[in-house]
Length: 158
View 1 (cartoon, rainbow, N blue to C red):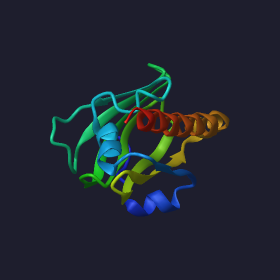
View 2: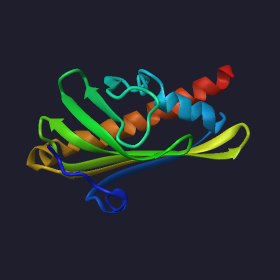
View 3: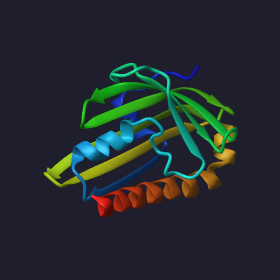
């Protein structure tokens, strides 16, 4: 069981990745994509399962798997501002790559048809996580790029 973190960890973690991009979709559409069943399925090798029934809120739990067995992460939300922001900390991870880990999603409306999405990943790695650190950056950057591409493709169909 990994320790809970608070919002300060998102800013002070030893390893952080932050991506912000403008999306040509309403904030409600982006929020809906981030909270739907199968969310982030546009990221190659990533599978997300919600473990808590809807409606989601504080304490919501989900499980993420990267490439099936490469990494399994259990998560619990400690921030939930419906339609705008959600953040979770990792409660368990296999293999033990993190001492502490959290993610934050912020969706800010710019106008009726555009929003800004900011995705923050924050880690304190174990020795195993540090050993695999050369892979972490490219995987995270690929997830950011695939997410940006997903929202661009979705905007093109709306």
